[in-house]
Every structure is written in C-alpha cells, then in structure tokens.
Image (cartoon, rainbow, N blue to C red; front, side):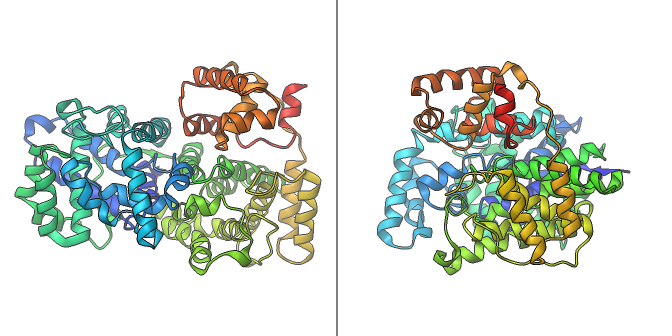
Length: 532
C-alpha cells in the first residue's frame, strides 16, 4: 500500500515547529485552520479542489527552509531557535513594530543584552532581511518538490515572508500578486499563534488588526466572522490523524526508494542546523545501508535502516546552532545547555512516534540518536558515554555508522580524523562494550571498499567542488582562500562558476544541491582521487 506522503509532510511540520521554537503541532493546527478557511471561500474560487490541495501542502511545508540560515541567525542573535520564534510573532508594520520589540531578545537575560539584540534586528531587517528570506525561499524550492509538493504549493512558499501591503520580504510583492494559498496560510498562521497566546478573542483581535496590512483583508474577514467555529476544529485529540483525514483526494503514497528519499529531505532540514553537519545524515544512511548489505540483511531491512539513518538526528533542530557549532568540553557546559543537547534524542523519538508509518523506525534510530547528542555534549571530541545494547542488530549498525561518520568529518575545534585513527576508536569502543563487535565489523568492511571516483555533476571542476565544500561549511571567501592557498579573488571566481553551474545563489542552496548528489560530506580521499 505504501506510505502516505502527507504523513511524512506532517513529520516535517513537527520538526520545523521545534526548529522555530513554536508549540509542537502548531503547523498541524495551521493546516486545519487554513482548510477551514478554504471551505468558506466562494465555490467559484475552489470548485476544482486545486486551491485546497495547494494550501494543504503549503501549510505543512511552510517552514521547510527554516534551518537554512540557522548558523547565521545564531551568529547575529545568539539563539536562532528563540529568534525564529520571535520573528514569527512580529508585525513589521512601522506603527506596531516598536511596541512588539519591547520583549524581543528576552532569551539573552539582561535588559542591556536584550536591547542590543532588538537594536541589531532593527538595523538588519531592511538590509539583510531580504537576503535572509531568499536563503529560506531558495532552500524551500530545492526541498519541497522532493517532498511531493505540487508546483503551486512550491510557489506559495515564496510568499512566506511577504505581506498584503507590499512591506514584506524578499521582493515586496503585494495584494493579488501574492498566491492565494500564501494569503490563506498567512491568516491561518497568525490566527493559530494568537489563539495559543491568548485564546479566541485575542485571535480575532489580532487577525482583524493585521487585515489590510500583513494579511489579505477578505481572508482575514472570513476568519473573524466565524472564528469560534474555525478554531474549534483544532481541538481534536489527535491532530495528526485529523490532518491526514483532511488530505484532499487523491492521496499520494510512496514505498521503497521513494520513502527513503522523503526521509532524506527531513534529514537535510535537520543537518542544515550546523555548518558541520551538512550532509551528515545522508552519509550515515549510506554507510549503514552498505554495512547492512555486507552482513546479509534483507532488502526491506536495508531500506528501513537507510531511512532511519536519515532520521536519527532530527531532534538536533531544538538546539541553537551556536551551541552545536561551539567546541565545548562537557565540563564547561551550563545545565540548560547540557539539557538541550541531551533532549535531541527525545525529540527525535517524539516526532517519529507521532507518525504511524515512521513509528517502526524509532527503535532503529534510538542508539544512533543518543550518540548524536552525546558527541555534541562532549564538544565533538571522543564519545565517552555508554548506550543501550538491547536494541535490534540493525540499530547497532546505525550506531556504529554514526560513530564512524562523526569521527571522519570535520567538527568544531577539530578536523576529520584519518580513517586509521577512526578505526582505532571504533575498535576500542568494541573492547570496552560501547559498540557491538559485528556491527563495527560490518561498518569497517563497508567503508574499506574504496568509492568509485566519478566526475562532479554539472561540469564542476575538482577545484570548484573543493570551494563548494568549504562554502557549505559557512566559510567566508577569505577563509577559503587561506585554507586552499589561493587568492580571495580566485575564490570569488570559483564561487561564481559554482552558482552558475548549479543554479543556486546561496550557501544553503548549493549545500542542499551537493547533498542531494552525494558530494557532501566528502569521503576520506575524495579530493585526492578527483585531482589524480
């Protein structure tokens, strides 16, 4: 029968709720409210059902690009998760912005630090804001189609940060130049956020106030006129089941490689949280699947394990990028930071357990997810914890693959370990009982098979690919120039060629393009083979 694509979209929505610091299942509520709004539109607007299907997909995928600038947001505002949450509630209308900014930056604690962040936001919103929005939109356009989104839903994602009055970003489109699905999504989201914050009356007041400015006044009026009934539809005991029940026909399903591909998109969203994690989940999935073949697991077991490899780190979206990208020995971590790192695996399990078709993968992800958190807590140094040895053998393979891939990739404060050193770490973990010996043997056997050297796609040269990989880590042109011992101007030329050949214009965009083609992260020895 296959897995319903809508169910995986719902899992993505849950993931991006956490990444943006909003209440769990907020996206599901927005989907239901948007569907109720569509039902109340005149029949001449919705007679073919196309708008309903477009709005359904767009609301579930609304924040698919939300992690694309997480490292940059963390660099500017310390906690990218808290920053995203604050921005979702802001009305950029000049008459109301100053009042709303009184609480902006409260995650910093002191009034002085809070005011500093608010001042920085005001300084950057008109200059860097459009560029930041294009980051998100470009990644949304790259990731939404592989999730099964229709062309109209993908187009609606370009309007996420736009406004009815034309004062939005990145392009300042206004009124009916915005997609109808995008305008419905705007009203539904603000209604849900206000309802969570202050109940039905507050939702009515806030949507009415924003009508004609942020929001389409006609759609806002539809909500205001029947708000109690519309919001009552979000009181379902099982919101995910309610969302799936509302999926417009025909229901789309996938199986096998199609399901694994969907899981890969979720993994990419999570990996974009850190410049050091880009492509990590897809590499873990590949290594685990190759190891599973070495020990003779069935095709079904291999497929499940590969899907679990993509999903094992979903929970990292709750952790600020500044914490993930900081080489911090565990003894120097504060209690709150330590707790956020440890909760990664908990949230991975919560997301998967909420979705029936993903629930069976949760036991496979559990040991590797715990290790993902343990490495981050240790400042990406040698993992020192212990794991639950009671899980299925396939889960122990994924666990060993997580260790191998983490050790052989660059991390904050340390370069990738050479294969021989990483192999020694895995063998030591077997000796002291932290890893399962047969699982480690399978992984080491799989990675010992040298990958076949292939020409980079789209005509990229070996040097352009090397520059791309450095840029995907968030390095500036100057930093890339120093690392490669070439001039900054030459780096600029190479990046221009990369952008032209890939069709993307942002670091996150080219990173997603490269991950989708297995170019990031690099396997040990890739560059040497490419240059030989």
